[in-house]
Length: 291
Image (cartoon, rainbow, N blue to C red):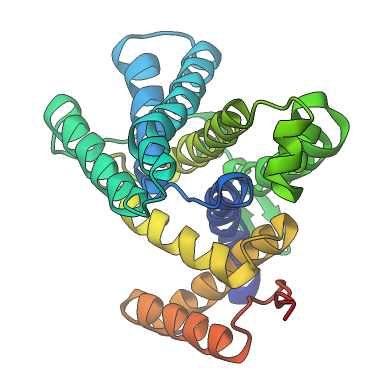
């Protein structure tokens, strides 16, 4: 029973890590850069949803939709402000620039939203429960992995079946050839960062009812998601998602077995060991270099 409860909790957390890591994946394969403000974008999604829904009293579907649009636009802003100017100059300063921009948005939220953590109003997804093999489960805990895996499937369909998705794949394969074919590489990169922000926003909105909302809620999630992206093999989207689920389940099992005191130490130690054994990630492939 303890194992089943930890498994359900871990799948929910793992889906959030997987979604955030999927954002790292999509920006990396398209532009060879990542958005280290991803955790802050997750926090922004939760804060915007709370503001529109609870503070302003807008209907929940509208609040969620506008919050997700805001996160996608923020992703584009990160690319335009903190990534593109440095990439054009062949500088890797975008790494620190995205970190700095994340700190900026964290502090903007701190001064506008407030220092005190807040909670989403209770809904039937939280208050109602049902039994699975004697374990009481909240519908929200089931909804999170379903949405996470569903978005991963939708992303795969988008990448392989739509014009914009195929354009992104062309950029991934060969940027120079994509330009010669008339593909606007700048737009493809912006779309990748918008999708990254969207994934982070979904993660923040889904996890918000289970946690308190604050300006710092995304920091640890962002760090863990990047670890998951590397662990899964950052160029493999389904590897990244599977690594997120594995990490979430491992974290929940460690917490249930030994207590939260040992969760971070043990989980990150396992990541280090896994990467020491497979530097390319659990589901990644070692690169082939021609000489």
